[in-house]
Length: 166
Image: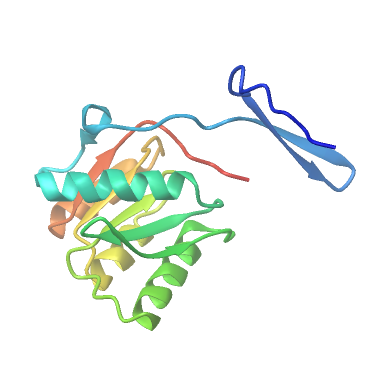
């Protein structure tokens, strides 16, 4: 028997994940950010090369299991941390993986699938050599992370779009 696919009539707008005694229903994430979607929230703005790396990392983090952090440099994935209970754990996982593979993170960028409720992620990222960060923004404590970035020569852009993948 041969099955024939009549083509795709349209993309499904919902995704379903089975759970023990239930189902998770979520909107399908079809959003892709461009340069015009970026809002620089720090006093220092990204270079054109950093914008390219930030957008590349943002595409990767969108397709990574939450909580997710992606580290990229020169349009290459250095490492990702995913599926952790906190973003700081995902970041530490990504840094450890990058070091294990021998990647130099000096000048790399970081993408997060959701906002930073505390400045701990940007602090750890800076120590690892990260120079620019892309994240949705929207935390009531955004100012703490932005202030750290401004005081420590880090660039931060926000998109306004969360990329949760469960």
